[in-house]
Length: 81
Ligand SMILES: [Ca+2]
Ligand SMILES: [Ca+2]
Image 1: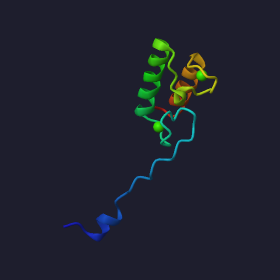
Image 2: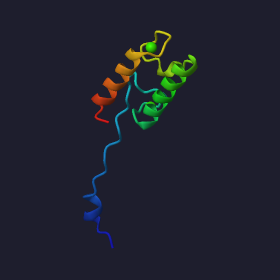
Image 3: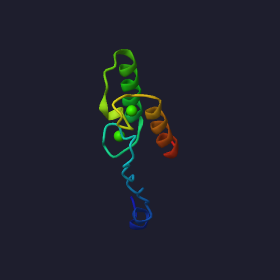
Image 4: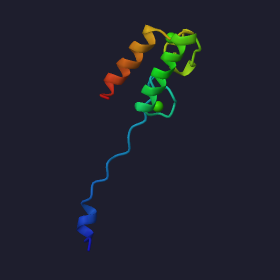
């Protein structure tokens, strides 16, 4: 049986902090593998047929280029992912 003291000593991890950076491709306030996959898919699509997923255009210049990749990777590395 679980004692009251055992319950009181249980550490509940803090909720993750919301992420407000530009690399949150899907806008869910978290930077994770979903954003990575979306960015890579947007990159591949853009460089295949110039279809732009504006969510991945991180510098908002109307194209998906090297600068967007640098911005994404900088944020990714800063988050320690
Ligand atoms: Ca996200
Ligand atoms: Ca861009």
